[in-house]
Image 1 (cartoon, rainbow, N blue to C red):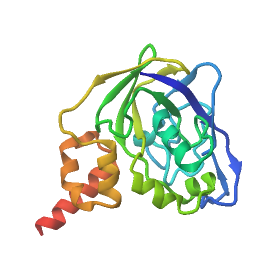
Image 2 (image 1 turned 45 degrees about the vertical axis):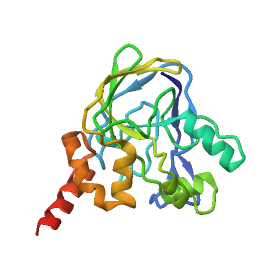
Image 3 (image 1 turned 180 degrees about the vertical axis):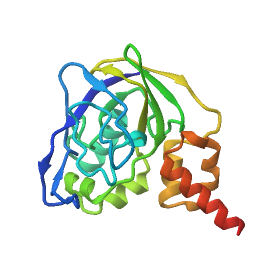
Image 4 (image 1 turned 90 degrees about the horizontal axis):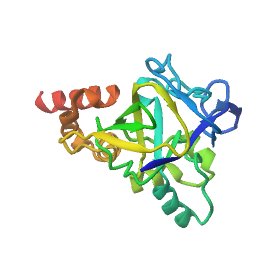
Length: 222
């Protein structure tokens, strides 16, 4: 298991984002050399967990629970065949393009050691947005991505440090609750009846998902 690339994006103007300034950093490109990984701060204030990576719309992206986004090269390869065109590392807006990891099947709270000592923890799957669809240039992309459910995973930073392309990835902790990033994604999009099951992951969940699951369960009891 390893990083094929560490990808960062620069802000650029586009016509398809709802970001007030009309810019996005979704077009990530592989970085040369080491990239510093940091705890960015709470959502709305903090942005990316990777130095040099632009998160332009902090209303919906970035922050501690979405500090880093990972996607498996194996899933990109499946999309390449379905879309009939090449997909470069970083083209889904992912910071980490991995090899040998079941990223969408990673457990909430699962921890990865990358390189010498960076530790990241899985918090949620990625929900597609209009900016993602515009970036991909595929009609109905949000629906198509949602139906497939290969979401990749957002991660929070537990131990900061430096990472680079080629670094090994080791799973150093796997919870026993069975709640995966893909399940979390389905629960908050198409299968809300799964929300109570997410509570088994506890505080490791993305804070917004945890609040949503608790609210759903409270409503069921009322």
